[in-house]
Amino acid sequence: MTDAGTSPHHVPTPPRLLPDEVHRAVGPGTALLRLETTGSRQSLLDGAWWPRSRDVERELPPLITALTEHLGPITRVGLDASAWNGIPTRLVVDDRVVHLDSFPVGDDTVLITRGDTDHFSLMVVPPATSSEAARTAMARAVHADNVTEAAEILLAELPHAAAP
Image (cartoon, helix red, strand yellow):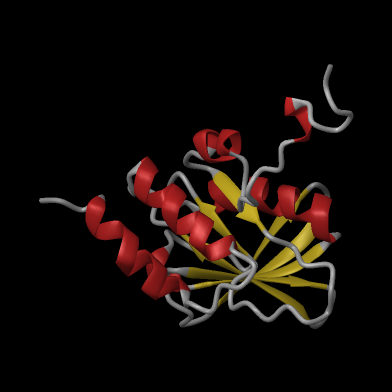
């Protein structure tokens, strides 16, 4: 005889940032987002992106399409010109014009604007980063109570990938 409610299906599991399956699926070209539904948005980063290359015209459209599905129309993207190969002033993505701005934000961050003033900051994992280091860095970046800047997260994780 078993007690109601004591089946193995009701065993509480510890909270995780993302299911293991998501971490295993993370590869180059992936964005992990933590989009808060409250107005507070107290963490420094709203997500992380691991582009496959530094080619803006190839890498940004899929990111913008994915973000638009969750955030609504994206109007601007701010990038560091020294980190990307030729930044055009605008791209047309899904029949919408997205303006691109060059800022000295560092190659570890991309700034996304929805509407006129709603900004999101995504950590950019360098394309050549190892899978293990990228997954760890992206998980830290999207953690709800993260107060660490993208550069610091990347410096903590990337030495594992950059062995000479």
